[in-house]
Length: 135
Ligand SMILES: [Cu+2]
Image 1: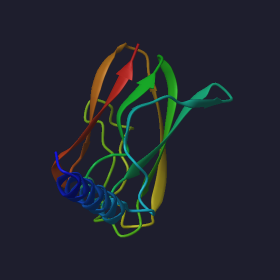
Image 2: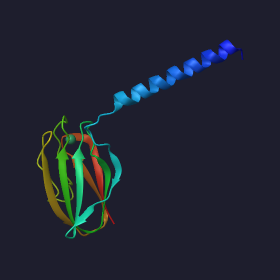
Image 3: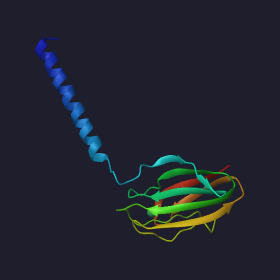
Image 4: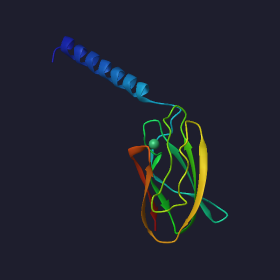
């Protein structure tokens, strides 16, 4: 490769790196929590506590809530700037919040004794789902 050719190649690579970094910054939403795959509870007075957020991109902030059989509290909130959401586990009647607007929050407490996977939904958004995994 000639000297001129090498200089051109370096310039092109530099431009690509800058373009990629710029796109990454534009995709960041600093006020929106990043979704996590699995959420483990904090335990307070024997209650497993899960802070869960309904996000603006119509997802829950965790895909799986990992619990043990027993008492569970979900502190559900809706992110600023988001559409309204609720937290509902159809198999567990007590595990149901109201429909909450952006910035609102509600806690629900319930007890699960049987191990299993309990689907979590938002009744407003059919593609918005998570799983309460009890084992
Ligand atoms: Cu929703």
